[in-house]
Amino acid sequence: MLLAKRTVLQPAAKGFARGFAAMGCIRFLMSLGSIIKQGRRGRELSESFKQLLRDCFRQSLFAGSFVGIYKLIFCWLKEIRLTKYRASQVNKNLESSQRIPDKEDTEPSENEQTLDTYDYRNEATIAGFVAGLTFLLDDEHRRQTLALYFASRAGALGVRRMLRKGMVPYIPSFATWVFTLCQVPNMHAALLDPDLLDQHYYGLIKKWSRDFTNDKLDVCIRNLQPTDGFKTCEEIGFHEGPCTQYLIKDMILNWGITAKMYVPLCVVPEVVFNSARILRIPGQTAIKLSRSIFQSGMMLATYIFAMKSSICFFRYITPHNGGSLNVIAGIVGGLGSGTGLLWEPEGRRQELAIYVLPQTLIVLWNMLKRIKLARPVPYFTTILFSATMA
Image 1: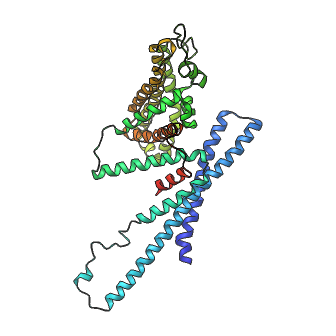
Image 2 (image 1 turned 90 degrees about the vertical axis):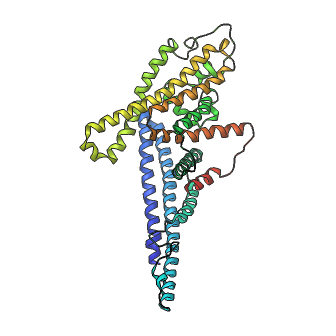
Image 3 (image 1 turned 30 degrees about the horizontal axis):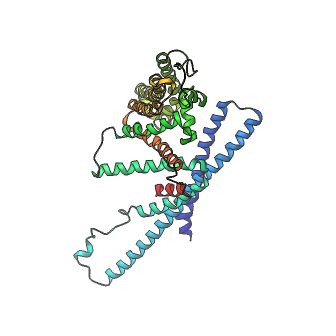
């Protein structure tokens, strides 16, 4: 019993505490920064803080329960494996002591596994699936995106494994193609049918674009009606000045804003994990960080430039401010926005492709539900998350 407590219950309790504390701190600091930035006061601030505490507790409970149950199941199964191994070794020693050993007894079998060679893969798979069921503790509005994100990561790991074994051929710039193709339905939905998108992701697109609103998009591309004469983007209130001048100026401004957003994302991990290198080679580290910030800022600026330029371009070639070409604007805008990924290094491209793939799957799923070719499956996201964790 003491052995079980030490080898099973203690790791589970420590895992729960660490998972709960880590997620609570991360979630609290991120949400608190957002509340401070929004400048809320009085009763609105009090309600936001209460919601923050509720979200922190719920997400922390999920993270702690996931880690704790994984440790509990894995250590329990591992203890069963060790008990069986010890029993088999005792029986083997008893049998060998009752007969004269020969040469074959002194040489280990090729198929015989020892504690040093056993990798506990099956135990980890079972523990991951059971622990994944704690996904029910998280907010249901986050489950779909998170489940699809982790499923995408699992798929990427599977592809890399097959590449190492030579099961599939290597395709140059595969991540760039995946990102670009994913942006076609994403951009089409953002420009013409935002109900298909995850609303948090749609909010990020409007935030990155700086001046996108539903009213502007309704006027300039979504609800166009034939008119007696063509009206420029400036006349309908989409932007000020000629399109070319606006797009160039807007791209420069977007780069400055998005580059500032990437400063903490690039600097903080370097300070936390590579502080010794910063002190040893500060000049090279500063150049590396500056290049990363510049590239990431240009990636997002190009992304927004392609989206806005597709609106301006197709408004000019579409007769009477209307027509089917406006549908193509989303497709061309998606293909164009994918070229922004070329600014990023190869490793970063893979991460961004994995990030946008779940958003594309949500769009396609909502399309299928709209035309009644699919219907919601109870607890599908929880099962998918559990299978991914396994």
